[in-house]
Image 1 (cartoon, rainbow, N blue to C red):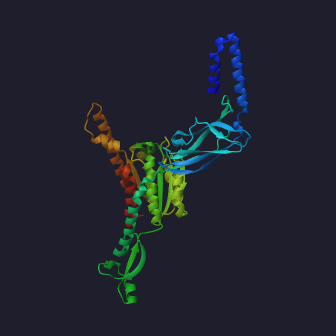
Image 2 (image 1 turned 90 degrees about the horizontal axis):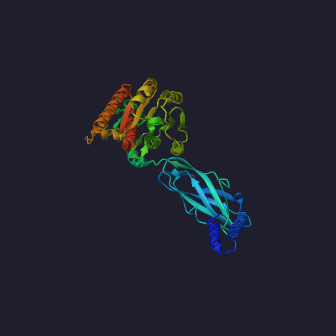
Image 3 (image 1 turned 90 degrees about the vertical axis):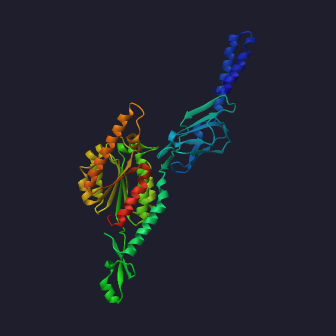
Length: 436
């Protein structure tokens, strides 16, 4: 029964005092209104008879807006009067163009289009939950309604990471080109690859002179060198409990993903092969470096649904997987937290095996709250205890950093907003030195 039926019943009740038998009048009025409601409901289009499909975007960057359109077809010979509620998960940020309380009229054989604008607030997969169609009769007195009828068409919007660090990519690529030029004009660096021979110019390093080639050509020739290419880079994302810590407005995992994307884009341009591994107590994602033109797109799609797991990371599993998959010496960049408990009990026991075979870089996004607490001026009775706790945590980080350095691990420990460029700079430095 709709509000119209209730209004009709109320208006009829106002006339009852004029009836000779009011109680009989109530019964007659109620029966009449109920009969009209049932008749009107019977004339409403059955929701099961409708055909519903969707079209629109399947992916969107976090912070952007996507449009998904619901197509509601009325194949019956009656006019459809309906109210539509298209429900998505709250984090999808759905804003329908047609409000759920607006009455929609679809003629026989016609189709209505209902666009929904989605501005997600979280990364990952955001599905449509349920479609509710409330079909009213011609008199708007009765209605047929069943949640999920017709069947909700499946649609999932994949929300990709923001990749805010891509603004640093032009500057890092310029540095990469400078490294190429420096290696060519200034001679040999450690572990670089031979490029070509050219005539000696004033200012060239005499140690780069190729004496045999000079003797054959009767001219002084020097060797030129270029940074090593086709090296192997493995990005490892720790998705355990420490990745759930919020750094500002986002979890540590999102900061690590942003840094990994910048590093992947830079390394792919440099001609290196990039693999990605995400794990906690099990492997969550794998991306291999085959098919470089589409590597970044595949990597973005693979990391989009990753979410932190509230469990201790199994570094034994990560080390075994890296050693099994990477036979050639590689640069392994581990994105995790520089936490004494997780590193001391989990990573340090397996680190010798990993560091013996590969070059390891540990990239950690520091928590700005610790620095703020450690340097804040006490303003209350609890502040000295908070400052002491923060200082102790920072001291433990220093001890962990020293322990990692003893195994030859390069530690990048910076605030979250600086992690992506700092990791890229470390990669460029190692590449310029030929230490990949």
